[in-house]
Image (tube, rainbow, N blue to C red):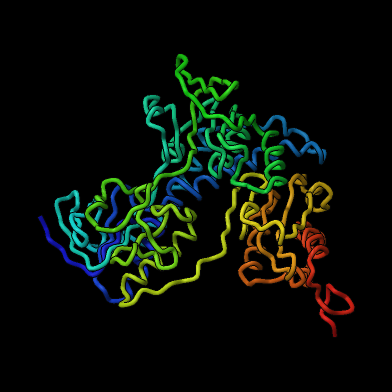
Length: 468
């Protein structure tokens, strides 16, 4: 058994762990990056990147259904080879993973250890390779894994998660997607567009994480055109021959496989956190300050999906940087976190920016709205289904946030996020240029609608322009 002593031990080599390492390394402090399981980020291996590869394949193939509008003949003869498509997705996935590894752990030598760790005491880690590590500071960045109810485990490989989906060489003829958040909607729509029979289920009454009733209703209308969606009831799964029967309330379907997209659970069991002396919440997650990533007043920091706070790649990266920075400082420093931004890459995109509808004080808020149906550029593209809702402070006109389902929402959401981050008013935004014809004109219409309702108006003879 080897005994090692370092200033900082970082547990987990995903996005948060690598970003923490990026701050610890240049400090001159001694450190070890310890990772159990496959190295590489969730994003590259089973998340953001392979899902976007599949989405692109599905969107390109689905586009054939629009070609008859333009007089393009022969589109009905197009077919797709699913095994070849999955091989393409896996090839891109492997490339992304290799790029992550070649720029990180492959070059770390003895500073990187592949092993699972558990706390023996607040400063001592026991590794499953027999070694022990004593660390002055510890960063926990062990990530998360898909939730699978224990009762579903008996169905074996008939129940897929993102951990197994992208390993499939072929896809089944029918799938029940259970859980219609980001992953469920993205993959469910993509599977449907690849001619796979899809049924979607969720206990919630809304899909895609929306809380604005107008956006929620529009999202449901649009997605139900893609595949049947059943909401509001718990799901029960039973075997029916070689298939699975999915029952939810009065709805029942028989499918080849299930895609479970019920969320993710932090990878904390096995760490023996009871030996750290830090306080845990009722889920067993360490209590921590999201501006410092410090667990109580201890020497332990927690970052990334494992803390259950903001399970999004850029947030995990920020948390890793904050944790790594504070782990090598004599005094812990607090950092201002970014304005929330969430993007679902279904078609149209569902996006949440800043304050969501559920977080608004509706008595002090005004809402600007535009529906995509009459927007010229969207009509030309054949993508004029959707709605954009922008929220502003009624008195000052400061933009607070937005919810939307719209084509190119991934771009509009960034523009609005930057505006919210800079505390711009709706008057500031409508003074900016909007080219014609672009999708941003839809946002312009929503902003003009919002501006008409706020009390604070910009001065000047032409309100949209700066006075000379």
